Image 1 (tube, helix red, strand yellow):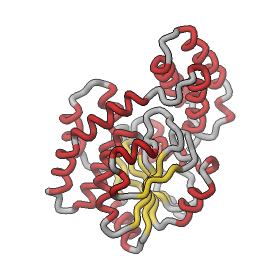
Image 2: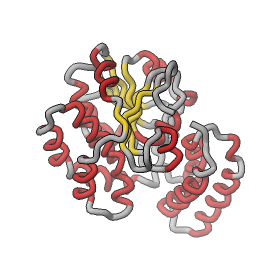
Image 3: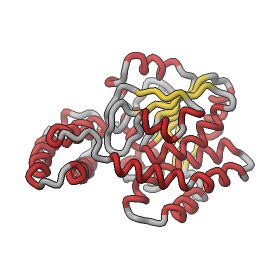
Image 4: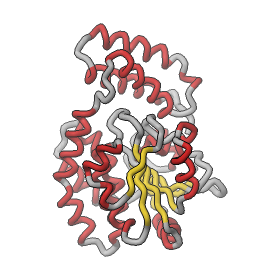
Length: 289
């Protein structure tokens, strides 16, 4: 998906946030922002928002020497998500359709970062969000794809969300070989291999690093071994908005599972902002707009 002008102020705000997490020195913060503004002026050089975000956050690392400014945020999010596991287990456990319920739990995990950032009652938020139906759900298509599948690749998003993903991974692992893809280096609050294993993802899936350090899986930057895996698996499920932005033109079928958090993403998926979506992208006969 192309980089929209609407993305630019969001990226600049995000870099300022990261700069303040990485350093208390206002002079350092100012240098980061000077370079970030200069990078914004080159926005035409970037194909997607995740590509530009990777460049912008690289400025924070370069100026501060800190590789993971969001480490404390991720730890907080994961701890909060782990505290919600009994609620998530109950939601799936009482469901008539455990797969559909696990898919909804996994999608709902996409609220973790925004809810905690706003200091909301996370239990109340998640309980309410679990009851919200999908605005668009290609669940029948997912079932059909899984019925003939041996291997499933789930591309992870943020660290707190990965706790929610474990319930979907567990359901998939009952009949499939499951692989969970993570970022190859820390970027914003996205999940890395060490974090995924600490959460317990490896109980249900083989954890692999994609080779990409952007906040969205850019295939051109992926490790060749991972790219072979991406092409070879039977089913791909992509989590979150960043992965959607990076993979919306992928040369294979991909199921996108996310909450549409901005107007541009909502328009692309033909859903309102805030809606939950499970949408199949097929290179021939694309289901999405």
